[in-house]
Amino acid sequence: ATPVGLLTGTGRAAQLGILIKGPQVLEDTRTVDTIVLDKTGTVTEGKLSVLDVIALAQVSDADVLRFAGSVESYSEHPIAQAIVEYARAQSALPSAEDFSSSPGGGVRARIEGHTVLAGRAAWLEENDVEISAPDHAALLAQQQRGTTAIWVAIDGRAAGLIALRDTIKAGSGSAIANLKEMGLRPILLTGDNASVAAEVAAAVGIDPADVFADVLPEGKVEAVRKLQAEGATVAMAGDGVNDAPALAQADLGIAMGSGTDVAIEAADLTVMGNDLGQVVTAIALARKTLGTIK
Ligand code: ADP
Ligand code: MG
Image (cartoon, rainbow, N blue to C red; front, side):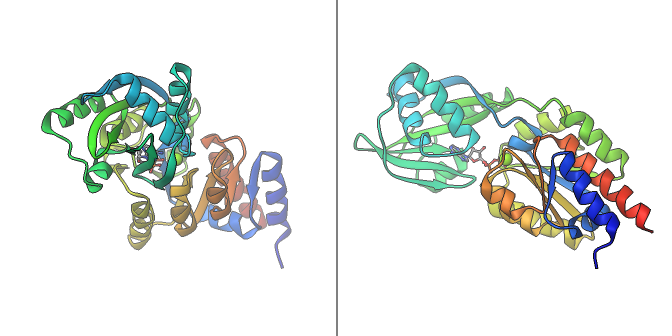
């Protein structure tokens, strides 16, 4: 039988905008000692804005943006939404065919007879796009500004890059401070580049040694497994399709309410307000509820 305290805890959580899949979840919540946080959409707003469009080859800025906007209009990623919004404001976008997406890598389609790829540099290179040394230098200069740079390739050639910036959610820093006070170790996990990750970690008070950047979607599950193998009881908070396997693997999976359906399904608990402060509330509530049963 389920202790009455647990049921009451579940109801109280619902009032606070925290949806829990069954009373057992509170029990698991109580014992976590490590919290893995996805960056984009979890610690940050996940609402990016385009700062710059830089054409590299014999292509105009306008074409780089038009092709990128077209291929990204078939993707749900926050990066895609930002590029599409920015591109649409400049010009009408051509339609694309044969769209495909590689989570944690990028997107591809045929547009006006050309093959267009948009994504991270390493993913483009895996797909036989050559990126020259000067082009890499342009990328590094962007990353040093703390931006996420998305490369665009047209017919196998690097054509340009789009620099974007996200903002940290207002409540993230204080929520992470609270988590630490409660004895939890926060870890930042992201597919984004190391310099962006380090900047976000520093702003919210996560130890530089606890930042895992450039992590592919498969790598997110691996990171959770590795922490568990080291003896940690792991909560993972995320919002993306790419976070779902790690949310399922974690001892406690937490989805952001604004997250993808896949993430919400994989999670044990969903915070409707998208606020890490609610994660603090959930853990505090679990500890209090279970404390009163004893
Ligand atoms: P995060 O872990 O921060 O939520 P993701 O794993 O979703 O990030 O993405 C990692 C990286 O993969 C992004 O920073 C970007 O470089 C690339 N990427 C993913 N999806 C797309 C897309 N739709 N368009 C362009 N690049 C993408
Ligand atoms: Mg995310």
